[in-house]
Length: 299
Image (cartoon, rainbow, N blue to C red; front, top):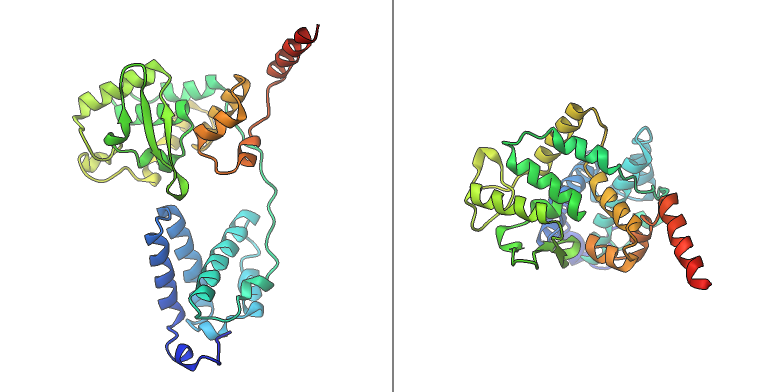
């Protein structure tokens, strides 16, 4: 595992726990999301305990034993742990702390790509309707997710400075995955009005758009707090809906509104158009209408 042909490197190899800290620091400096950092930290901490902080003891057989201890978990959880360790060992190999990447000898868990599941507009509106009028931040945040298809992390990282509310050309500057930026058209006048009212009542002129209530002029609202609030509104409305389904619902609405895949890809911020194509399941009524138009044009 360690390279004996370079004794100077061998002698200064830190303990596994130290390497994990370096790895996570590099990820943080690379602007990885907080969610990713927490997941990697948890998975690698379990590995550290399993091998008693001994990097030299880690080979393919030890990793197989490690993964076998999580056989009771779902496929998704096991695949995530494999991904975390694969990323760590690839990093350690590049840093020349190891001369063999043991994950290359591990058969990876393969997951079937789940089809996106949207929710009918009437059900989404029923959930939004139970949000108290006084909860202006929540009403705006969840309406924004519905109308734009933003990822939750993207919405929570919006700053007031990212808004352009120029009349008839209202846009958001979104900071997406991998540091990629994109401009999102705010094409719903009701949403624009809601944004303007929110800014007026909150008095925000700069900084995070969505802030924790306990510190209204300070820290950004957390992902966990948003999930908890959305879940409570779903319970109150008597409708089951995961927060990410709002993004799926927006994409499905665009598909059934005959918006092109290229435009949808740009709006959702997908790097690969194959990801966008997963949403291309039209309703039968939409498909029938499109075929009728095509048939008429052939006559």
